[in-house]
Amino acid sequence: MSEMENIQQRPLLLKILKSPYLIISAMIGGILMGVYAPDASTIIAPAGTIYLNLLKMTIFPILISAIITSIGHVFGNKETKIFLGRILTYSFLFLFIISIISVIFPLIIQPGSGLSESARITLGKTLSAADQSGSSASYFQEKQGFVSFLGQMIPQNIFDSMGKGHSLQILFFSILLGVATGALRDNNRKTLLGWTEALFKAFFSIIEWIMYLLPFGLFSLMAGQIAKSGLETIFAMGMFVMVIYLVSLVIFLASAVIISISTKVSFYKAIFSLKDALLIAFGTQSTFASMPATINGLSKELKVDEELVNLVVPLGSVINRFSMIITYGVATVFAAQLYGVSLGVADICLALVLIVLAAIAGAGTPGIVSLAMISIIFTPLGLPSSALLVLLLAINPVTEPITTMTNIYAVAASTALIAKKKKEPLVEEVE
Image 1 (tube, rainbow, N blue to C red):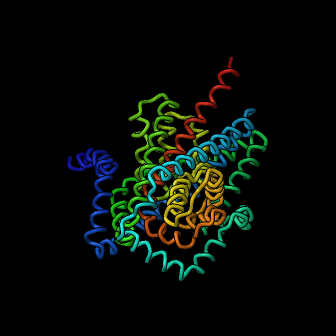
Image 2: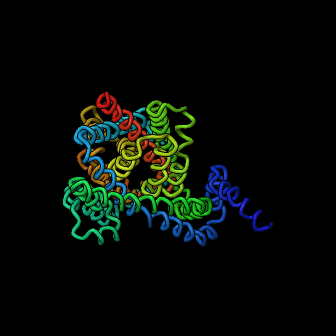
Image 3: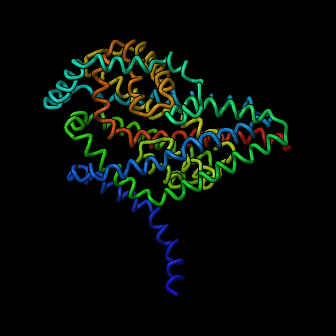
């Protein structure tokens, strides 16, 4: 009898572990522990790293299997060229719109002007120290230039690329193998796609198991990050952080409206259906870690075409770095105001193009590494990138959670928008 009661209680326990209230409480508790008990937070921080590694363990198998399966199916469809063209069109459209929003808001609010005396002293010390060690920062930026990005697209060894986490090379390999799979004869194509689809579902099951540990993982991650970052520089950069959060909120709400209209669901459901992905993104600061939950939310909860979701979300997670667009846009205007550099209309237009290029150049790299790409924008505008990079690295633990969450939601919005457009030709074809 007791064994039967235990079996009946398991679903309730699992439901509690995935409750958004428990997950949010765990995140808040982690933040408070990081502030008031930094030593203890440092001790439990490795537990958060272990949880993040569990999520990362499934990322590349899901990325490869999802793209091969999706492209393999897509290339057997007559609408392939139009379909992929729409993906690229909407991706660039979203990138430029978000870059415009990210520049307009700091131009209006002016976070780099009117700083308090104490904030200027704190930032002055940080910038001075950065200038003295600028050689190392410059070298770091040279290693991640736009030209090297183009040359590093093709992997010499795909297994080595997977081990080192070179997601752009893995993406290139997956797309190429997906196209080759789609070009096979029917029997061979169906056999291979059956295997990749089964692999995709198997790793998806592993993700669902890992999700039950999410409250414990997020508590440890948040506590460790807050304990490490400190608050002095963060407070001095308060206006900058505020604008980052404001821009992210605007883009998040706009994305919710797009998802709501495209999928014909309520505004509330458009957000709640992707709550797991949003919480993972906020807690782990990893778009890849939240990718499986995004796919599940769009295809299962919002009923978006599963084949399309399996293709667009992995592609968008690598290529569409909306989180970096937000950071680059606000940082560019902030730096210009901080150093007293006037940005004319021509400078702003140039900055918008450079922001998109920098985001594309940093595609597939971790957020911290992508920050070095800001030199692509700053150098033509005459702004010191190495000094400001230090400030961005200092506040990155505070800004990256919200920008990552906004990033994955904007990817979901673009996917929902493309899915809505994809259905139109299919209706005509049936008629």
